[in-house]
Length: 278
Figure 1 (spheres, rainbow, N blue to C red):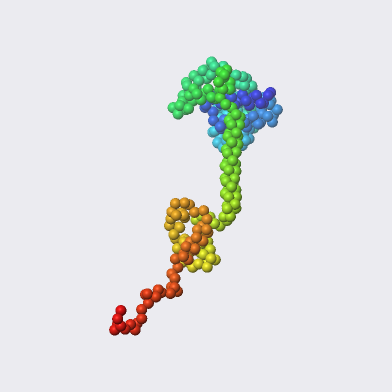
Figure 2: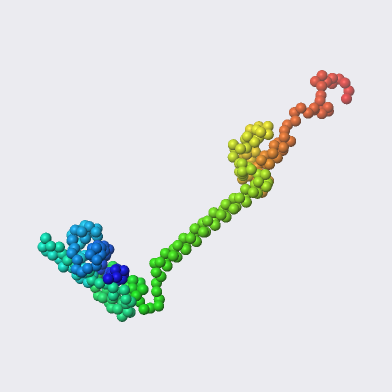
């Protein structure tokens, strides 16, 4: 017995029966495990407790319901034993023939059977023609096939690799731009500490280093902070230290010159003799 074809036939048959649920599949897998341990011989003795343990079914009612429905749908032939000292027996039905392609007339028959079943409106809405054709797609004789999961996984891998390459490219461009800016700063002699705008903690020490007062530093900082660090109110500042040096030079030009001598014609004597003629 080819167990690969058997399992393939089982899943093909299950996929077309919408009344079965994951609990039925779990129970059948437990039965298949016991069948495998018995070298695929029929019939085999089964234990309810052992099957419930392997299939993770916790309810006796659920177990009996599922194994009865598997028997009704010709997955197995269940022969229960009502003797507590004798185990039940079960025969696993060969499902190799379900791996053969299904003809279109069989598909129509299957759809008719599904529509005639007494199910609720929600199940009918889900089991439409498109769903059935997708379930049975790889058995159809039609040349129009849906993509396999392997193809979808491959496409996802390609898309993921493309996204990763795109992110790596963006990181490379950003790093390259940073390197270019760094080289330009080195070429112009602009250190990273001269970034625009500077902080007050950088401006004050620079003015003190040039023997200027804190008030002059505040004037410089407040002036350019208010106009957005623009030179002449138009051009963006490139080197604040150069602008600060110009500020210091211009500030020295407008210092008050209190020590200059007064003009002679403005000097008058306090002991003027008004009796003298002009």
